[in-house]
Length: 300
Image (cartoon, rainbow, N blue to C red):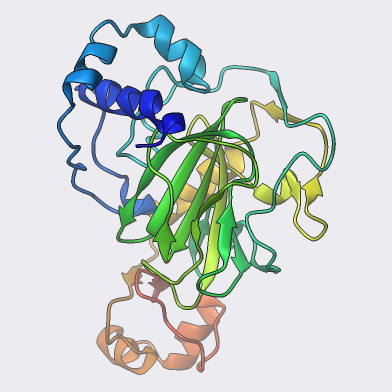
């Protein structure tokens, strides 16, 4: 174990096991249920080091602990248990200069934040080739490094201003929970793991587990900060919460089918008695469109 990871890794073990009240299941819209990671047994040195650990140590060593009041190394994002955002306005400092950010990769934006194929896309997709290095955008501490059935190999980093960033579909992870990292440090290699249809990086920015459009924080084209600070308002998360509700609670009177392996527009038209042209019209797609597993298709 390297020296920069010794104390943080013990933090991970101690706090992960001392939080029995925390939900330990990922939400369905962020990857479905996942089993708990099995940590190696603590050595005598580790037991001695963590035996007197208290909340003041957590506040000192764990970024943003005063905001989150937990350090969960298993659940990606737990929106239901996170502290609600009660501020009229909260200013988050991002850096001293516009260049105080490392772009996770050099690729162009291929899919923006927002609604996509009837579902909310909580991050942005950036083009890369399998094996390209993926870098941490800001300094912080690795909270998650694991495999997830939707995100594939995924890393989540918590930063000192309370923001968290997520890096998904990696072919290889190079960090572990508790690692202290700087902006520009390599987190892993780009890839096409999980629910992915080609090599790319899915990149998210969140605060208190709620998604923020990365393009409002970072000038993706030029690889710089949009501003030296980011102002959060009570309404900042309203649109994403409304979109999430809309994708999980269909409107009254409308009927939806969730696409499974083998589904085709022709087969669905026969199953529900709606011709293919009408299916395309009400869903805003073409007859040649590719259906994605998990996509919700309205048929009435």
